[in-house]
Length: 467
Image (cartoon, rainbow, N blue to C red; front, side):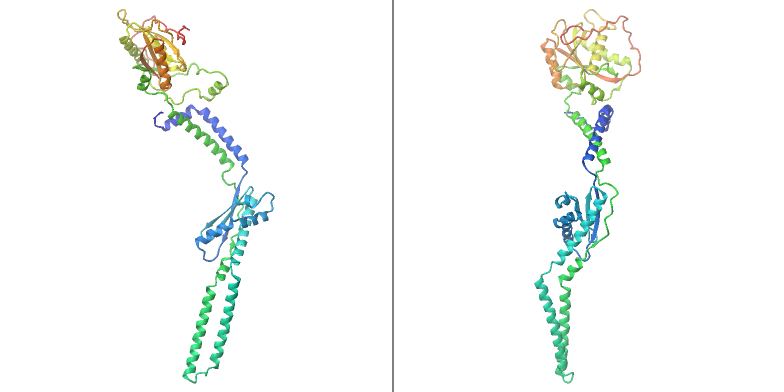
């Protein structure tokens, strides 16, 4: 698994190198969003407000909101609408009620047209007020009300009797009569205060106040659709497909097992790194092998070329690049002077193949050959498939030199190439990494090459037969 940090430059590379695929998937996502909008009918939502006068607790307001969307109110609204196929169960999913500030309950209705949404909200508010008034008005015990009325009548009769006793007493002639009239007036006052308190504590009066709910005007006809609209679905589908594609590329890069560093590649091949060489970036002469409709589609979408490889770095001039190749040839000469080596390149590695051909040309055109038996080794380039690597049996070669580019092959694939070299009798004498660079200014190399440069041997196939 790659541990490279995901940076904005990585996302920019995905967008730049996969722009055809991303464009196609964005269009597909927009079409999916448009198709979804056709399956989902337009929805319009509006609301009506109901004022609850009097003193209400928060718990009571929440209870009234539950009543507003209860089965009784919703069934009455469904019956009032009179539309076939619309019952209370289906309608309950399209209405809501919320408690707002100031003892206000907001009743909302959703329908497929603005007119139906407006009518639904108005009917909900009206039926809620009617049902709430019935509930609060019927919440009285008839026997208790009769007993309370009888008590009031008894109080009235007692008050009359007190008046008669006060008039029958001697009007102020004796101390006892004055005291009696005073006591009767005190009793009358206490009795009236008790009646007033009884009237204030009567819950029926409070329910009468609370039952007087008011609908605060008709619902407003909605001017636009309820989200998600068709435009939002189209944009959301396109954005979703874009994000899924980018995230999929990032996950694939994080889970990639392709080796990128020099120590990992050398360890997988069981050899040592002899150096790295540069190959000027150029448009591949041919696309990766593949025929048929699938290969054509991959070529049109641009997915047949790797995206996760870093952009080519800047390089020096031609002389500096040639120096790198000569250093590799010098190290080979120090290890195996005047020998023949097999240059193994994984099939499909265009950069590695170009580097191997250039390396073979440099070895064949040694600028200053020394004594016999001390020159550069003779190199023969062979491409082998990584799926089933097969090399020609050892003939005159003293070993194999593996030339490849980083970031293309897994440890298992490179181990398979190393095993193929051992099976054919070729010892892996070293590894050379080829990297793509931006070509710098063209300048002749510092040391002149011989006029007659031997052409590199043509690449052999896996069977070792010259092409």
